[in-house]
Image 1 (tube, rainbow, N blue to C red):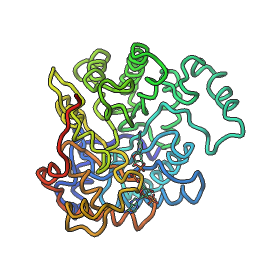
Image 2: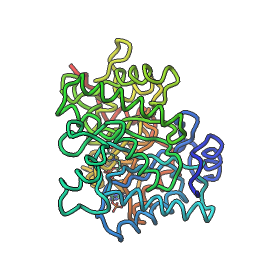
Image 3: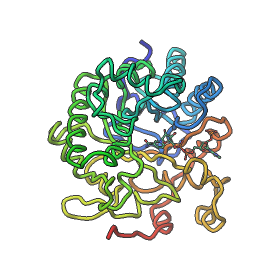
Image 4: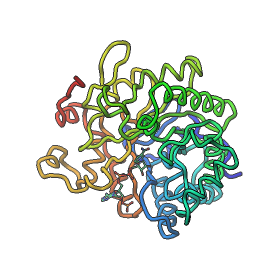
Length: 371
Ligand SMILES: NC(=O)c1ccc[n+]([C@@H]2O[C@H](COP(=O)([O-])OP(=O)(O)OC[C@H]3O[C@@H](n4cnc5c(N)ncnc54)[C@H](OP(=O)(O)O)[C@@H]3O)[C@@H](O)[C@H]2O)c1
């Protein structure tokens, strides 16, 4: 298989060395791996062949320009994003344009994915594809679309590995686990996360994933009193219980951008009795932070003039918005959804530039406490 193996220290270091035009601040460490400060996101776009082709072209372009972290999820574009990335990666590896050890392939499971397109009867599809074969029971399903049961995650991980044409994914995220908290008690939720983390630690031992994490939307950004709040310390304690001190829960993902600054500016996490931001908590607990929606789904490509002026010297507001995210202390990678060649080139031109000094990032936001 073209995709045997996984990202390694030597492979990612080799990739980094080959990207001589990239500024030294561009590559950062996720445990023993070197990851780029900008990563390819694959969420948006129509579920059609034209969009598959755009993502395949974007993958080739980003890998050539210094981005070695790819983010996807089984449900994105009804599995078409994973499949498009898998097919393109296989071609690139066969051509030896890139080696499996050089790149981080990251995906997520939790949401029920369709198979290429929305079926005529989604309810019937869920019954036939998941309930009848026994991947989950009706009570395991939340909101008709989300499930964390290990037998279901096993099926999803197996499908993702097939879609992506790899034997191992470098980071496997539990997708938006906080969605469960809208529907079940915190005790039930923590029991489900315990089972999910046990399953994920077993998958690390089986060589099917290297690291795991939680990819979230609101969970790490809201007030601790919010029913959907996620405490990073609580989840790390859970990972330690199931995986010991050398557990593999090492990555979190959340949105962070000029309009959603909580990860940096909102001290809503507590570690060892001290309140701090999510970015500080992750650093304290030895986790990496990958940022989603760096452009707030393209809305930050036109900034108010006063904000744009605070990040001078760049050629577009899109670049300014991404530069802010990749420069924020504690951010590993700013994910950017980019299918169009012009967007890829504009965004990855930043890899040649140093990140902003921390004081300049600090100027942009005054910190606010959670209480
Ligand atoms: N809960 C979660 O786990 C979660 C949630 C959201 C996102 N994510 C991840 O994070 C990634 C990034 O977030 P996102 O894709 O939602 O939003 P985003 O990166 O904030 O924005 C992507 C949009 O911006 C456009 N764009 C990119 N560069 C541009 C530029 N220079 N000028 C103008 N427009 C530009 C893209 O257009 P084109 O594509 O047409 O080039 C696309 O429509 C996702 O793809 C996904 O992998 C995870």
